Length: 123
Image (cartoon, rainbow, N blue to C red; front, side, top):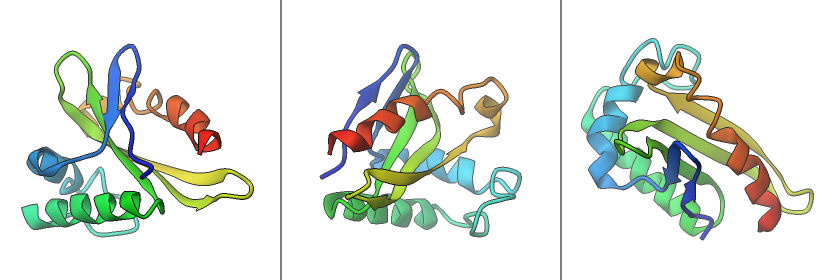
């Protein structure tokens, strides 16, 4: 499984679990956050629960990596970051992320990417 836990000075990146569903729903039901996303804003808590389940499935199959981005100090969920369309031979993948508007303006959205840029070459 690609799932892992990554810690930086300020952040913790870890797989999402059902305890994160409510906070994840709050972020991804926001029309502004989802403005340039490839899907509509989530409309029910079940959307978040399905996403968490689907992400866990994809990680179990080593197809994608989806991690929640949390502030280390408060454990508050900032959003999610994903590696997908992983190409094993060339060790490259696409990266995507969605960050709460409350935190995106503070530069937090750029910092979680650095640890993930290194990680795929280790697998």
